[in-house]
Length: 158
Picture (cartoon, rainbow, N blue to C red):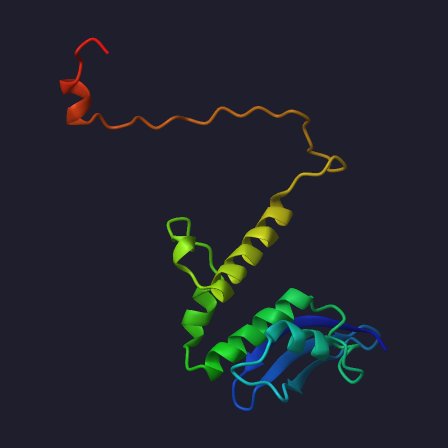
């Protein structure tokens, strides 16, 4: 049987992955609720996602869903079990250019780095791309720096 995943989400009570899929032959759209068993706030989300993706009962349905998407859903479930809000969990996946990554713990830093790697691969140009240009040079506008008072005062011939 072949299925095409349309949407994927989480359900908090009971902890479950919700999958909206379409049967490729009959074109029927259905919803499948996959319970997440033996998962606690201390569980490893990557192992749980891998186990769910390789489970014989759910393997055909989750074929189109990426491993990283399942990991994100498990992280959201784990955060909810730890008492964090949905907004806080989703904010940990967003990239903020002004955020100091040195202040993050290892788990949140791994999330941010994963998102950066994903964004890099999406924007990366390969030699086989039709709009690839070898040795592309770009001129970036330079911002003017503000003058400090000590710069003007120390003009003693240096």
